[in-house]
Picture 1 (cartoon, rainbow, N blue to C red):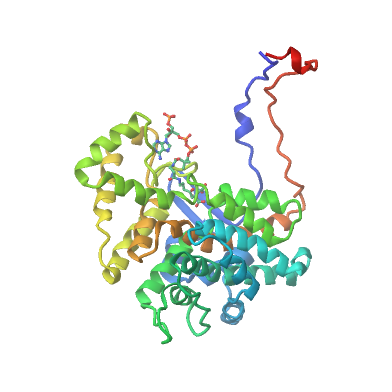
Picture 2 (cartoon, rainbow, N blue to C red):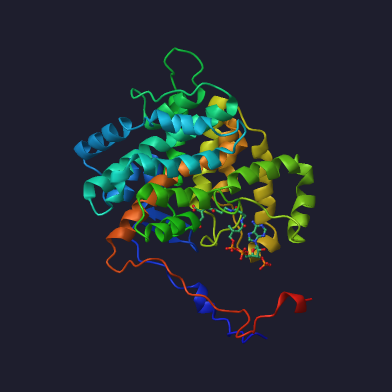
Length: 390
Ligand code: SDX
């Protein structure tokens, strides 16, 4: 016994901050951005409009939205040296690793962003990060595929430009399918923010040191890379591949209940009900399949969900599908490699990270992150000469 302090469960439950950006009711499966239900935003808004809403707190007027879209559209290029930086990675580098490095590198190209109290610098950092994340993501994909990088096409929509940079294979102008543009927009609205998740907490914590926004957002990319967070959508598809057929589901669920496996894409720290995002993504999956052809793994996913939701082990632990359970099936249907799935999460979460970073800066009570600990180690020991150690 090293003078172990008694464990204080409240230690885990202290709120890290006050926020007015995203509201979640985990028991009732409610998600709202700035008070607007996610269902309405998915039906009636666009990702760029939602990004504006998250960052500036209100839906933009027509003039504000046109200006915002113009600015984002005309900042999609990255410096040629960033392209050279990316070309320095191994051909098989994980795109999240490349994204992490390049977002951090952006901080060296915009040193003026260090003026984090300047409203114009804050605004430009938001514009540049939202504008350039799809470009960096597409460049990373083309790097992995050994294909020439495709520059942004400012005539296209935000999602359409991303599809062009990813899949354009000729000199002819890329014509994205509007159904895929809409599906991406909805997916990105659903992934834009989620209050104090792991990666947002990383952005707030790193940002509280008053580092520039590019470095703070790079911390969010790093946290999202983890398989328990943004990496789960990649793990879900690998899990479904391993299960292989509906007939193998009972054996897999038995292994989960023996704690030999995790049911990836299930469970959530906040949602103890169906994640509302999973429900919308499941509906959109079938709309995407009308364009791309059905991803056969969805039949295994739907049956797996059905069996789990009928199983006391999962019901008693309030384990439901989360945002990652179906999203990977859409990305796979779009012919994205699994390594790109988390990158597809990082693109839209950039607007949430920026909104949370700005809110943190504006909070007069914000101090540098410095959590306390419960010390459980040894105390007051005397140094032992090396010849006397066992
Ligand atoms: C995201 O925070 C956010 O908002 C995140 C996110 C966002 O938008 O930013 O929503 C995005 O990260 C979604 C989550 C993606 N991750 C996964 O799908 C990975 C699989 N899920 C689990 O690892 C887990 O559910 C977590 C990490 C998501 C949540 O973990 P918690 O809240 O810490 O839950 P826990 O580990 O304490 O589990 C409680 C019980 C345990 O059982 P007992 O040991 O008490 O018997 O539920 C079990 C766990 O073993 N459990 C699971 C499980 N998740 C929890 N058992 C099997 N499969 C699972 N997926």
